[in-house]
Length: 239
Image (cartoon, rainbow, N blue to C red; front, side, top):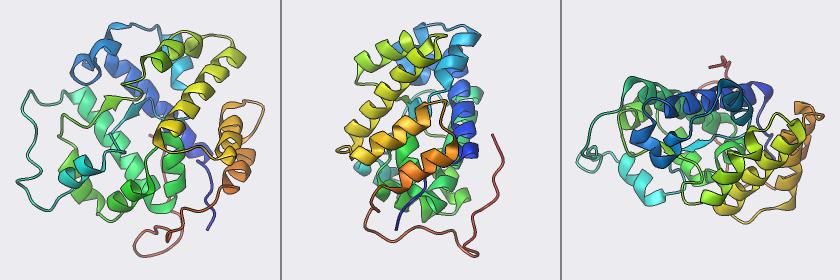
């Protein structure tokens, strides 16, 4: 089975979540983002950086053992880490981001990989749970939300320079470099992913071309995940 890339609505939601993340950095960012929160960006710089077509933050989706614990039926295994609870802004961002990825995992797990680097197995675990159960087990955790590329300082250095540039071409090149770093970190990169990333980042290409490029990718070799009940694509609202 071939998967489509993220839709126009998906990309709008990703950028809205990115803007919320960057805004959170200026207030409660020390809790989840460490030194990155010390860099203050203007509103225009936040807007430029937030247009990256992937999430600038991560829920540690590639850490399978960690997520087995988080989603376990055993309440003892899911004990929250010690420390102060999430502030309201960070919790709102976490709930919104998790809800978005849960929904996307149910009808297009391939798009989840494109926007977050999450493996198919993570999408499968998440999609198997009702949204209320999923959020009950995740929304209050203080060890989920982290900046993407937290171990790749060079990627953030580029994003905080050319990635906030008013020059659209320079900015797109920076975002594409970071995008490819995310996918390379997640798994070996298929050339078709590069074509999809070029379509996502090139403002001259529309979303239909992005979906065509993404559809050339081979399937994960597993059954697709469908929502319970009707198989039609669910209606979504922008965040």
